Length: 288
Image 1 (tube, helix red, strand yellow):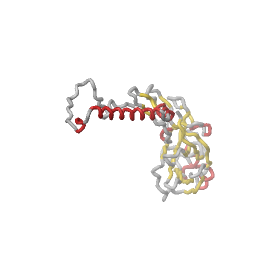
Image 2: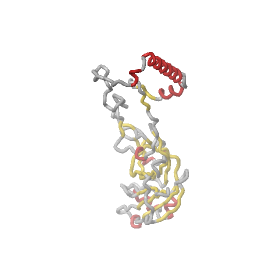
Image 3: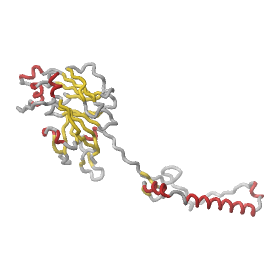
Image 4: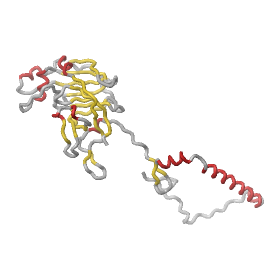
């Protein structure tokens, strides 16, 4: 913190007593007719009052004053600059590796300032199958290069969406992906939707449907990311196929299909990944 150079305004130096000052010739006043002995006696009384005040202030509570000074750093001019305590502000975007975070001093790559601590998951297999997302549809998203994976959300960009509305209801919807030259792709034209109550400590399914028509709009306080690599405190609960190491920092990174932070003031987050039909949930926490 830069302390201003003078008391008048920032950047303006204080008056230099060494510089010549303009002459000062006060006009005669009513005090000029008062005898000097009277003035001297009055001045002595003022000095006595000042001394009493100084003694009184010096004998006050020194603990409070000392505590205030200790909380700051003396800057050489006699003033003390205090530094406010940092406050953690959860932000799902601050958990992304993205293009990389770097140290301002060394310019070396560092991990994101926040990470997700997974606290649980909710199996959505039965709910998904009840609206037509069965075994055949679940394997289609990963049917590439001859490799198939069961129980998976779609993996293509923009195929999965998650957000919270103004009533704090979490909405998860996805499209069944068409895979060329696959006989099971013929019936894969549905849109799937599950709504969750996320007002409690764990999410609960409210409804399932094959349509996204008439859904309420997204809350302005809702935040989210899609197809993002994020820092996860304990990735062991996730499928191995979505967990890896960040090349720049060597830290654990998980590839999320989509994640939502219902409110910008809340540390709660919800997300889904490929090779799984679970809704994972956890909390954002500072990583450094």
